[in-house]
Image (cartoon, rainbow, N blue to C red; front, side):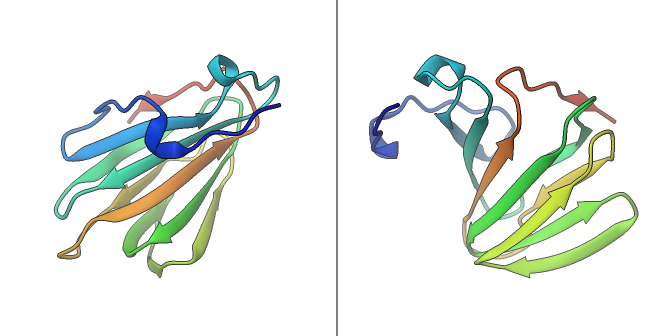
Length: 116
């Protein structure tokens, strides 16, 4: 159990034009869930990938995201959610002129990701 101000957590750059921070996870004491907050700058993206063996819930909390699940593409304006089944290719793009913020939630502390 714990309380965390997101601004006090360490950031990293997992993809070009993206800044992320883990806001829930094993390192913060979680036993079965991970959450990753990502700011995506205009023209940037979380690349197309899958999560072998587990799903992902992505909350769009700021801005408008172009979301891809399999062959489906949809623009989602915050607040919105995309639920990605395990082993399905997905992506989040920022095709707008302002930064967007998403939070990826995983039902595991051992997040697996494979780029496709």
